Amino acid sequence: MDFLQNYGFLIVTMIQQGLLGLSLYFPLMAGQLSLASPGFYALGGYIAAIMGTNAAFAPLRESLGSWIFPLEWLVAGVASAALGLIVGVPALRLRGIYLALATIAFVEILRVVALNLSVTGGAVGLFGVPQPFGFVDRWQYVWIFGPLLVLVLLFTARLERSRVGRAFRSLREDELAADAMGVPPTRYKVMAFVIGAVLAGIVGAMSAPFLNTWNARQGTFDASIAYLAYVLIGGSRNMWGPVLGGALLAALPEVLRPLQDWRLIINGLVLVVASLYLPQGLVGLFRRRRAAPLARPATQEVAK
Image 1 (cartoon, rainbow, N blue to C red):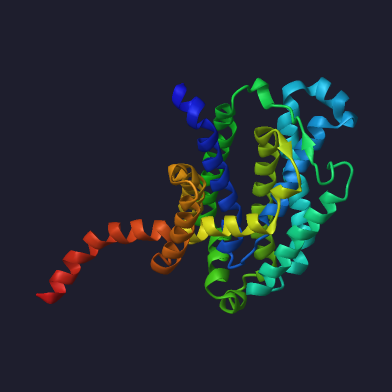
Image 2: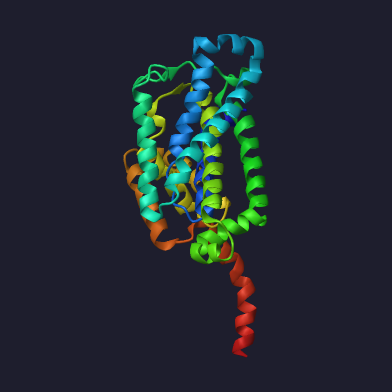
């Protein structure tokens, strides 16, 4: 129990950041470099914070009790899906860096809108977001973020083996060839974009009570780069990559805390070294080590 009291916040943060890394993984499965996840994350958090603190929702909170929290997650997911469709259909006609710039613009537009609305608390934000299910300690959020991570991983594994997953991979490898084989690019790219948006929105709705406050700083350009780093460090070709990268980069500043200001330098060096020498991420390193013993006998046989 002492371990959870001391490190529970960090453990939950590692799971949370892994989930946010996965929200970028879905568009990348279809070959799309989307950096829109912080916008949907902020949207989900604002929905949960407003439903939890605004007086207009007081009768609903009283009538539903603790069931208001699953309703917040549901509303955040539906709202993110709807906005993902609205943004995705025109934006996903772009490719590469142009799509990345368009999604960054989307994140900034949402941030500026949140800064200028009274219902979102403006620049100050919203405070005192109610805790779900009578939670008292931060480590208890493992019981909602943990099952979500398991469900998302199971969903991702099933998706990758399905016809939709194969369509995503074909678009990532060669969009023109996939289109020629009857795979409609726009439909599947929008589908991947919406799946990532829904996940980010639900994680945001869960994170608002966890942080007990919500403001426009939750969805910024810096967050877009951080989520992208999770995928690049962990690996963008395997579902475990974003989870591993998010957990590692969330824990690294805490592990290096005794080094004080040097920890920021080391954190940056880790990103640079991993980008240069691990092009397939940490997951790619593990896969190469596992494949090496299998490849060695075949090589020796050829040599004979």
